[in-house]
Length: 314
Image (cartoon, rainbow, N blue to C red):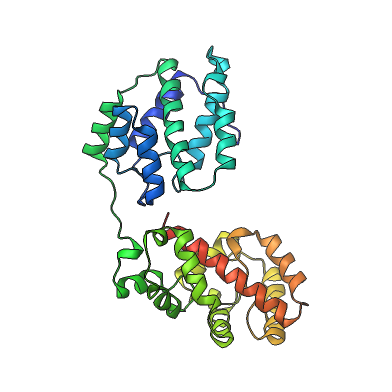
């Protein structure tokens, strides 16, 4: 990521952004919360800051990567402003993020980045509230957002919210609910694991039903605007809503050939792809045997489900 050197004004702006940005919507799982609390405990004001936002992440939550990368870039360029960049350990922090495994490590990194940010902003000469003032600001203006946790939902609420994660297949959510979900299932990856267990353990006919519930890529349903909201967004993300006539005709012909051969539509996680890579994958997979394509399509369905869950959970 290329970011221009950040001077005093930018450092101040970054601080204002960090103070003004609402906390991530999700509630951190116990391991993350415990790690943040333990790492910040030596500094009462910093501990109060995180306690006041219910330990919601500022640098490590969903969508926080651009903010974190901008800060690490600023820290690495501190020499340009007469500050010793090595003092902030930007490269060490970046390496630690790449190597991080588990919520406890991420919690420790969350606090480490906050300390580096505060040190950098203070030495830049930017106005900087005390950590106690920061904690008071969060408590007064940004109380932690409370979202109903999947493990605490009623059956009806759970199925209503997650029944569409697997296309037109609410039975997967119904069966997952019966697993007696716990805190580990309150995050996208944990709940994805539970839903996929139900999908994988289903009879082949049931899994085939999930595959056939998926629409053709840029097919008649898309043209008639009858896709689910999720499918509409996904296909648009890869430009499949803006095909040329020639591209649409080619895709339509491949769809027909594929369905006739395999008995279910071509399925790919379009959010992982571009229009060009989708067309290339379609051409490469169309000649596979049915067993190979059935396994590939099921894996892609699970990948699509993960993307959808990440839209709903941290």
